[in-house]
Amino acid sequence: MSNIFADRIEALRKGLDKNDANWYLCTTSDPHGSEYISDHYKIREFLSGFTGSNGDLLIGPEGAWLWTDGRYFVQAAKELEGSGTVLMRMGMEGVPELNDFLKEHILEGDVLMFNGKLMGAATGAEIRDILKEKGAFLLAGADPADEVWKDRPADSSEKIWILPSALYGEEYEAKLCRIRKKMKETGCGTHIISALDDQMWLFNIRGGDIRYNPVCYAYTVISEKEVRLYVKEESVTDELISYAEDKGIVLLSYHDFYGDLNDVGAGRVLVDPAYTNYLLLRLLEKQGAVPVFERNPSAGFKAVKNRTECENIRRVYLKDSLILTRFLKYMKEEGLKAGISEYEAAMKLDKMRLEDDECYDLSFTTISACGANAAMMHYEAEKDNCAVTAEDEVYLVDSGGQYTGGTTDVTRTLIPVGASAELKKHFTKVCAGTLALQNVIFLKGVTGRNLDVIARKPLWELGTDYKCGTGHGVGYMLNVHEGPQSIRPKCLRNVKEAEMEAGVVISDEPGVYIEGKYGIRTENILLCVSSMKNADGEFLSFEPLTYVPIDLDGIDTAYLEDKERRQLNEYHRAVREKLSPFMNEEEKIWLENVTREV
Image (tube, rainbow, N blue to C red):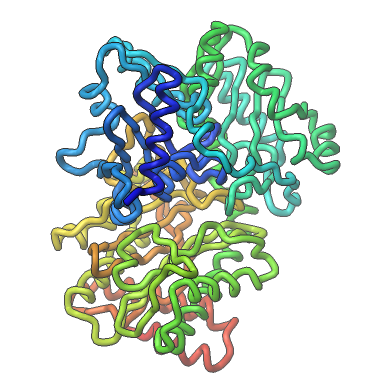
């Protein structure tokens, strides 16, 4: 029986033939290197059927292969079924990296195509070098997928809005001064910013071009004397025009950006390789400019929240914790007993969040999953394609909101009464890992890779691991995933590690995922703060922003050390203190019980 995605890939091959090419590479990206992209740029999803946020699709003369990371192994295997595309499980033994695969399979005289706007500069340059070594050729212009995707959604151009001064805590002029100082240190007279959230931070503006991410499509060119902001004409408002005139920002058309690159000249240009596309790189090279690959200075500045932002974040996380706690009470007392669907549960929680006056959007699609579906880290319940929840099944909910004053993210897992010993052991150890990281004190200068083992240790002792990082940065009224800080066990290729700093907001989310059975994740969001200074240096620690009960039905104290049990009790005491003032008497009684000492 024909498969629609196999048919699309075959149609793509015909497009390759027209261009005298035989290989096609499609990544998950837009021209700005965004992690989450608008529907217009979901070419890889259109061709393969895989809906995850990370994946590279390679189509060859006689096969197709898709590389993705451990978050999506279960999901990808299901979505690729019947398409003929081979799942390449990144990081697993015997699975070559994409570049190694190309080195082995590309033949002399072969031609590989990719869309230069949708390929990262560093990745594109590496592939160019591989092809050159093999005597093969690269075409980075026309995209044959354009001919295959006939009903492609239009690109987005939502209105841009200016943040009120009470929300951002630092004026545009001060941010620009800091960036220009970094430019001078690198010897660069020009800096091009492609990363959308970095531009939103710099200008104190927000947009709506990517679902759940309040960003607009834009490019920024900073020189010693001028700042150019390229945005779509449809996104411009009178307020933005007035704001730009007041700040001395030159507003230009987004569609003129590539043509205007000729004005950059032959000097040193600071660009972030993680967000610069290959076409931009080639245009700079052609005019003799010297690209200096460094992380955007704005990325590091943006990650460290200022006092105003921290005050707003604390307030927003408290109300978000209250909303989720009330939802968990409903699920424990009514939802699971009634057997509502995963989709209905997600819609209820979404409604509860959006009823708050300050919550103007979700921060990502709510993950509402029971039983085996919870083993898929980024599972999405669809109205007509989801499971029914039940009292005797694990239920996992990962959700968050965009508030006027912060971006939230939190996961809790509900465990059935009378759960198996194995399930309770896994849940208890996940809880121990979350709280161990939350309570750590560490020397300034440490990176997330140094901290990762603290959360994994309780699970590693069982011979268990989770195939993803432990923590990601969280934006401020921006992307729910933010760099440069992260907590993970390994270095990422071509990514410089960033030290943990006071003011960084980061997630803490170890888990256990047993394919076909259940998934467990306990996620708190933490604010990095200064702890103490002495002769040995400055020490940092974490302040929890999330105050939501951890399901005691899943805790087996036999698997908790005394210190871990004390940490659980102390956290639940803090949950009671934070939430009780906003609860009615019935809710308070319930909260006292579900946060009782163990």
